[in-house]
Each structure stands twice: as C-alpha cells, then as structure tokens.
Image 1 (cartoon, helix red, strand yellow):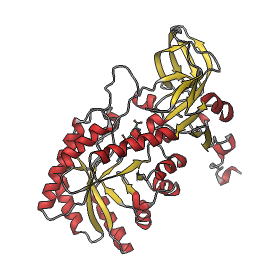
Image 2 (image 1 turned 180 degrees about the vertical axis):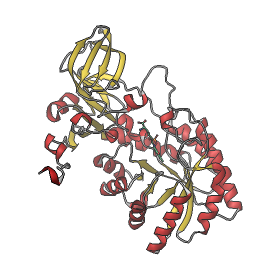
Image 3 (image 1 turned 90 degrees about the horizontal axis):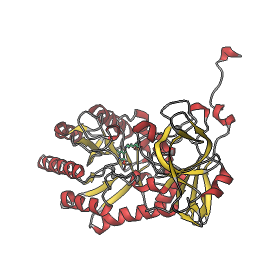
Image 4 (image 1 turned 135 degrees about the vertical axis):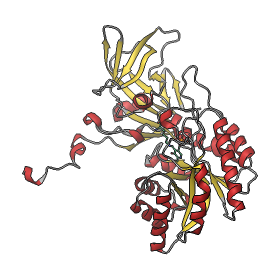
Length: 425
Ligand code: LLP
C-alpha cells in the first residue's frame, strides 16, 4: 500500500503532482511519501503489538539514510540499526537518540567502537572473536561495559537473491551457530562486556516465513544452552529481511507483517525476552519512487531504447541484483492504450545500465516523465557520482506540501573535495 496514485490523469504523490516536482526540482529525483512511511511504520509496529509481543523496532538506516526520512520515523518512535560510525552520526543528527540505536556490522573499527561507546548506544552486535576482544579493551579503557549481542549465523537458506543472503555459513556474517556458545562463554567472562542479547539477520527481500521460523528455532535452542550455562540473555534481536512486493508477475507475494508477527510469537514469544527488530526495506521501499525523464527514444536495429536521465549510479539495484522495478508513466495512459516492448536504459557508459529489458509500456517520447517504483529502499542510499553525475536529489512530500530534503550538488561541488598534488603547482 502506498500513496503514488493517478488523479485527473496525472501521477501524484499524496496531493502533489509529480510533474510539479519535476518542473521545480528537475530530474532525476527521488520522491518519498510521508503518509506511506507512516502507514508502513504503523502497520508493522501494530502487527507486533497485536501479537502481544514486547518489541522495539530499529529502522535499518542503510535502506534510506535521508535525514528527513529518519526524522519522520523518529517522530513515530523509531530506533535505528546502523552499520558504521557515519550512520550512527547521521541517525543521531536526525533525532534518534543513541539509547535507541543498535550498532551492527561485520567490520567495525576501533574508532567506531569507541565512538559508539562514547555516545552510549543501546547495543553493539558483535560478529567475531577479535571484535569482541577489541570492544572489551576499548570499553575497559573507558571504564564502561559494552552492552552486546553476538550475531549468530543460523545457517539457513533464506530463499532470496544470493547477493542479499546473509545467514549461511559461507557468508561472512555472524558467528557460526556451532561456535556461538564458546564465544558467549568468553564474552561473559570479559570485564568490559555486558552480555545482553542474541542477534541474527538472515538476508533481505525474504518472501517466505519458513526460513525465519528455522532461524528463530536455532536462536531458541541457543538461548536454552546459554541459560543452562548461567549466561543471562534479556533480549533477542531478530534482524530485518521481510520482503515487499515489487509487482512483477509471477513473484511470490511477501507475507503480511501480521503473519510474520505470528511466527515470532510462536517461536520466540514465550521466552521472557524482549524482542528487537531491524526492518529496512519494508518501511521505506514502497514509500519512494525515482522520478526520471525520457531524453531520447532511439529506434535500434533490433529493439527500441527509451533513454532516461536516471542511471545505474542513481538506482543500482537492477544492474547489481537484476532487480525488477515497476515503471509507470507520470501521464496516465488512456484506458486500452496500445503498449510496446522497449528497453528502458540510462545514460551511463556501461552495458549494465538497464532498468528494464523488453518491458511492455505505453508509447514513450522524449520529455515524458516516468517513475521507477519501490525505490525508497536501497535507492538513493546506494547512489554515487559515477560518470561525473551529481548525486540524485531527494524530495519529501506530506499532503499537499513538498520539500527538497537533499539538494542536487552542483558540478563545482563534484570537484570540491579534490585537490592537485603539491608538485602540480
Ligand atoms: N539488519 C541487518 C544486520 C542488515 O544487514 C540488514 C540489511 C537489515 C537489518 C535490513 O534488512 P531489510 O529489512 O532491509 O531486508 N542492497 C540490497 C539489500 C541489502 C540488505 C543488507 N542488509 C538490495 O538493494 O536489495
């Protein structure tokens, strides 16, 4: 459910015509809906509450780190899951207190760990023995105890794209399920460490409940082993990963949050532990579109190319994961209008700069506006300036208002961080 709909023949975000944003801000541009963000947050947290779970929700800011998006969620009571010192800084800057922030990530540096302890983050999710020992040392230097979870790799098949699978033993993430008890034993004996939780995260865009249930059972078993060994665990951090519909025919429909909450309750609800969740995509994906304009329509020898002004640097998911994003024209096609098969491509000098191959769309001409849907998660967050293209700007809509919440950098700004070497005069 989202708030990008046709009205009077034109695609709107809430009450704002997307054509008005394109005219004022230019394209390409990401557009986010406050109403959709709010709705997703409310449905997700409501499902947990309805299932009677004692849970806190920590938005995975890697999905969308825009400050205005984070503030929208912070105002709804969101905590954050961050994976770097930069994300921690940005989340706090947006108004999410450190006391609601979980620090995840497989390669946190000494400086990042020290910063997280100085800020007083809620929990640090440790992913290796060397990290545990380093964190202990840093915490002792500061005369504090670091509140930790150990991220356990449950070795389950998440049934998603291999590049976004994280819970198999071949993946770099977490501590092998079989090694976890020993590491908890060590952690419990380290003076700079306060063991609080078990953490897991098995992957992203997961459409099936079975992998979650299997991983939760592993957690449950580990909890029993730890408790038998006298290691007290207060909470279980079950990560994120719930998939969203990208509206491709034939794709499995991701389960609703209520079904997910039911499985959590069945597998983990009776353990006397508080639950932490780290959804990213589910909250923001369908709350954002990438608005772009057709530059050229090119009749190739074997197919028609619709060349748009957004590129793989603005939205890398199709190039990186063969991801599908629905494409819709901003001007509503007449009922029964003819369609044609086209390739929608960007201007980047890479063959992988393709948003859609042989997609059925109404006839498109230069200057027509299009949106790539479901782009509010891992869209702007993964954008870059490849091919000398300034980072794509972001707009937040709320009812009939909109604001530019990240402006487009100028060409000047593209080069301001660079300098000549001293010998170049
Ligand atoms: N927690 C941890 C520790 C994570 O690594 C992730 C995502 C999440 C939570 C949030 O997962 P979500 O609810 O969003 O599935 N760039 C890829 C997705 C990478 C996900 C990485 N980890 C994509 O565009 O599909």
